Image (tube, rainbow, N blue to C red; front, side, top):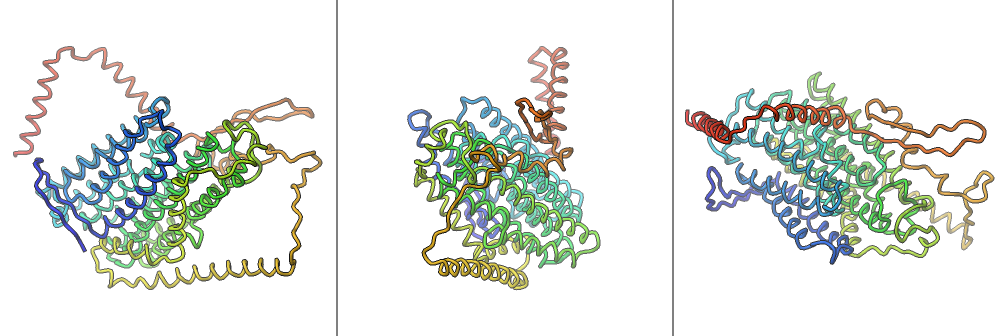
Length: 615
């Protein structure tokens, strides 16, 4: 079902044309939930800034961003879409640089702005080629146009280049690890939860318009999902800062979404509607699921940072005692992102798994090979994500409090007297998101039905003709078995307490191996927890470790510093920037010093464009 709105608009080649269809509805649901929750969370999160920062300006750009997100997913005209896209870029930039007195924040904002505008260039070129072939900027007219295989392939690649930057595909993700830690936590949640999904929406809209694409397009999208997913979670494992770790997990989950879309595109290209609906539906469901649990995790990280004034995990610990509600809600988000049963992340990943196995059986040999690779990659992502969030939760919330934390939590003894203290404006949105994560995990048909309608819309088939019972039956069975096992465990706990009566079990400190007192120095740090995995992949991750060598019977005091560097940044962007600086310096000595010549060049270029358009 589609709903249209058209109105007069005095813009060349443009039209105020809005449309809500099953594809845009999935994103509208996510936008509505996150904008409301992040806005409420921001009221509590921003209280310490009252009287110190212009909060009205920040609220204005937040409202503009929310409106832009709605316009993007409902725009039915390329000009309106691009206008909303640019406004989203600018409003997000101003939301990111809220703490603009910090040089790192300004740097992150400008990296985001430059990357976004480079991506927009590809989008302008893509829509120009599509409009030239269709004779209109209207999406519906474009969808009724037959594109040649060569043009369709070029448009697909331009869509990946333009929308992939916003989505955070590897290796054009460079802005994402900088922008998320620099932003206020509710903005980080909104960016990770829905803003980067606008890149996914753009790709989906192009897939809907281009009904026929070359077969290789599905393989390319699937491989982008594999590389982004695996590298994203590996980079996350090597991070020591909480919000930067979550930022890299966004890249991982965007890879999972790309896996689903790749499977759907393969099914559509090989005329297997069931496979196409499974892939597209699983990818769209993960769009919604990721928006919920990742926003919940960023909200939890914001509460931790607000209380401790740091996001460095090696300076945290034992926060489950002082932030009990936040720790439980963060745990729900962690279990969801790891794809464990009874939580929403499991549902969408199960559907994508099911689609990959269907592709393994129903596609030609080449498709089966790629699907088997996708299965292995998705399993590896799940295992690494589980290891990563064991590290995060254990380091931040469990164990003993670590020393040298700034602010009111510096003294471990004083921490025992501090309770949650988190604003209700911050806790209630987290509870809502956690409840939705559990609800979708227990009753998957609610959200999955919405996503499958979007998948059928992308496949251009009737959903009633797709046998979805083949996926819902085993999915429901798995959920029931896990619930039964959980009920059995809880029953054994109740029986044990009944047999013990009122006797309470004594609680003792962990044996300290002869030391007088267990110290927080005995605990794993975030670096030591992930060391074995990071060491194994050190050549891929650019892992570097300095110091830490202990020798002799009475070793001297030493220090250990380790870090993981982004390969794309170190091998591509930094050398490329250095080359551009070198070229600009050389050209600067020989530049033309007459303004009139520049004006002549601009005039000649405009004449060339006019002749090309009119020929």
